[in-house]
Image 1: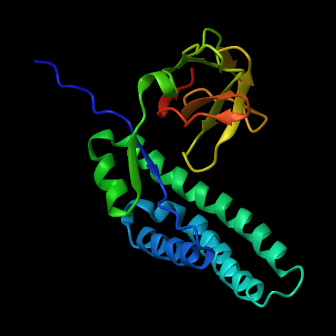
Image 2: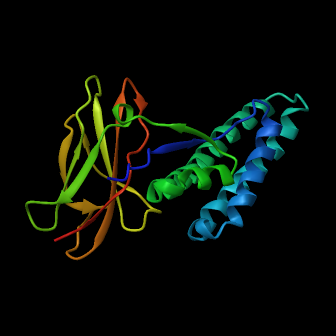
Length: 211
């Protein structure tokens, strides 16, 4: 009897609406991440994220003084902080995608909200060794109404680069960060789509060795 493949789970923050509470929530989340051996490779990112949250706390205190201009500075810092924390959240999502059987445990350990992403919503993604040497062919399931397809590539799953994008669901990647792909190197690839300015979640990561 075939074993059923675990469904892909998506992790999300449980964000309080109050800025002060949000900062505290972020700091508790980052503290838990910093003590998890699974996330040792992103220690620098975690440190940078903590710096942004502490700046948010400072600007929020200043905004409470109601001095003109302080609230705008706080709002700008809130945007910067959210972007940095979304980067961290993306690393947690990658960890779950790499280990679907234990994704729920990984997400729940860090007090993250979990939902199931259906195959129809995210679409299927394939990546294979290219027909031409030093290339990788990528294909995202064609989904009606999607105006763009994005394909990302990485050598370490920490730094990602846009390898190809456009209106077609099929493409070929021949470089990473403007450097030609290297024969024998293992690359990681993922994809997502866009519709009316709204992006889908990233697909699961696929490993391909360049030939």
